[in-house]
Image (cartoon, rainbow, N blue to C red; front, side, top):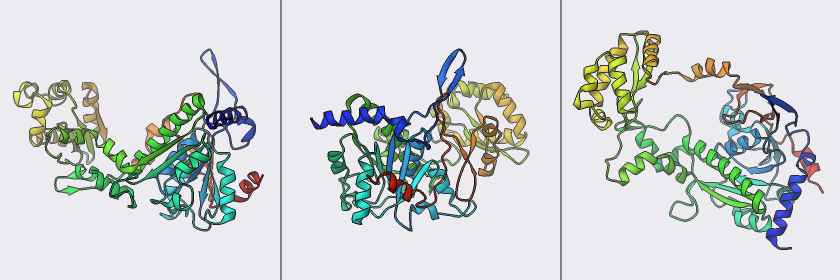
Length: 419
């Protein structure tokens, strides 16, 4: 049998045996009624097994979202040490906030991949896996004899994701890469903050963006495998992700524009658009993103239709050049009014607006609570609240997976993969 034919047969066997093979950790198959249609409640990745050698944020975020959709995620960790994110802080009753965020719904296995016994154990697991995800240091997989191309040769149905900082080739491919380093290298810090004061975004956008690209690529590769029987090798460089996310700024300079200058709570590309203190000591964020919105803001919010007719402010490029003037006008108007009044007037005029919140405000945000966006996840220190995944079909069930202690599933999974 040809390798491709054998790979396709393996996929068919996995699909036929998905429900029987992976019992209690998978979602159920009950029915629900939506309107007049019977809809089966399901986890769309039920029967998919993911093996991961992961650290910190990028790869763990990818695999956590796969677990959210019902995949079985087996997290391989160094004995006695584990994922470095386990020890970033002790904010969650002694556990790390990063680890809680990124690892519910997974199983943890301690394994020494450099030891013969550990390598044999890994080989038995990978032979029954559908997806393999890793974000180790440059060259680490190769030194373990687990280079992606070699794994693909041995397991042609396997979807393999190899996350690195700078990709293979080029003068930087040997360098370690963390979120701040890649954001600095990729220019995102230079358009964040204020002029002359670059800043790292508070959210680790390089890590998160990489994890989400990896997640979406795995889904596409699994879909392709359903049709062809073949897996895929998916290399993802964090620098490439940041470069993609720099889209508008990168395109502007490629076509002759000057280096964008950051404007703090605003956008260098549109004006007026920013954060303005209110009379009751809060901060409102509002502004315009089109010429039509500017006309509405001038007439229906500020009550100054003459500004909308002023040729100096007619187009967005004009308003960007006069950002300081417009910020002063809008800031003075906001300073005379309470936040509630400003938001009511802006809403009535069809102008986007928001309150500037802190993290504690987000934790207590009624829009999350009212829509049932929180659920409990089990941990070694008891249940903790976690958010539901942002994107779910209405009939999908999210498995209630816990956050594993280091090596919590080692013995059970060793027994499972013994034969």
